[in-house]
Image (cartoon, rainbow, N blue to C red; front, side, top):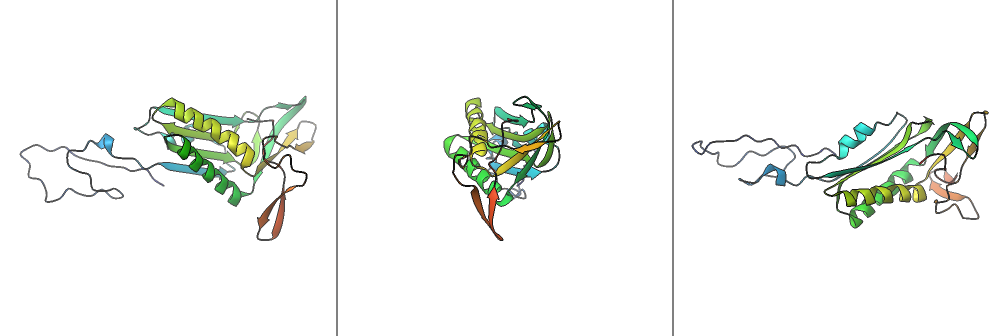
Length: 212
């Protein structure tokens, strides 16, 4: 989705007005005398999974709005250690159809709880080296309290419900899939199963403790 772009030109009292004001592509007709700052900007939920390196600047720009005075960010990065072992990278995988659907539900829940404007959730897949971002969540709102609470809710709920999982790669050439205690199926006595076109897919629990 693209944000609304409106341009206008000033005119003198002596200029003859057209029979009707021109329409801007992708926008409703603007009433005469209305301040451009009062034109409602359509809210956006932007979700992306990528194997490319994440950019904090890029994600931040997507949620900036002239209607907002706050932009809150959460950036999860790969830590270089876990329980005394040296971590060299993390490897992320996701069940994309369900992951995207669950994140959209999180965005919807956020909008029910707080008056936020734009929401962006970017998650990296594949290998993520130490100190690089695996997830960036950005939320804009008129006041800081809403965006701060929304970002906190987003990461906590994502870690608990979204089927994204990862493997820790250690310096000694070993690796390990990790459970996240926040996953709602982490305490289940049987593996969590997802319906897919080929039958059932066994899914390890999402996210581990070596990052965010």
